[in-house]
Length: 333
Image (cartoon, rainbow, N blue to C red; front, top):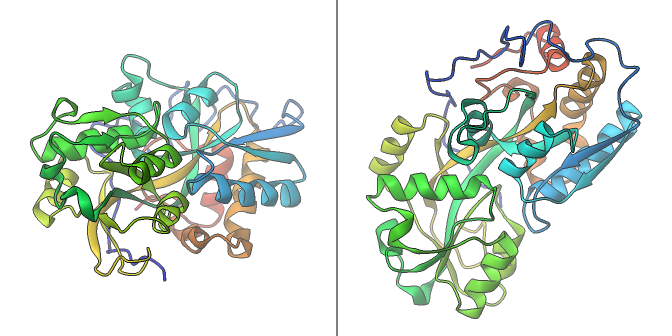
């Protein structure tokens, strides 16, 4: 059974000074310092950074890499990683070509805040959005955790170092009057988080990923899980403070034993790209992705649609991708 999404519009905050197709020389949506239409300097092998092997990025990334390889004719390899923030850092350091990330993390990187404090990134651009990523607070019935406030004093995984999950956890705790000091924070991957819950070493875990998430589904084989809801007033407060969030819910039955729908929030997964890739190559990658998404087997492929490609994108788009969107009259919502 698939998760239903509440209607929403992702609008990044007015603090962003970069438009959807900016004119900055560093990051620009027009004539930036990349290779432009000249593809002679493009690599013969592309790397696509994903996330942990038990999350959504890795399997979906493998399918996207295959599409790029087959449709564009450039061998593309999907690689596991620590996900969003680390992925952008590696793109910025020219250690990778393409990467999954979250729209909120991309915004942080451009603004130089949170994981990118005083280290703003200006050489990584957007290709487009993929699907909503649900913030899931996973626990078990025996912990007595029924609300975010109940996390106080508990041992809680808040995501791997360099992940967007950490920032999500910090912000959700914030609107509930808590900080990381109020919990025993653990920096674990999704697999490590669910293993810790199974072993009784941790009480709960923040997991930001498309549902159903493999690590969470695996946990249901040994434990009766529950997801901690976020109340409507806190969802609204969070969205007001951080407009890249949206109301979301996990439908009953998405996980074994989950009998009621759970209200929470989501951000958007997206593909980011090094500005060193040529316009022509990125145009072809964008075309291949959005025109072949329906051939992918992954459950999240249903959300990868051209008309939604610029949702949540309030920062510079690679000129090659922008050319493709212009040809199809796609603009930011």
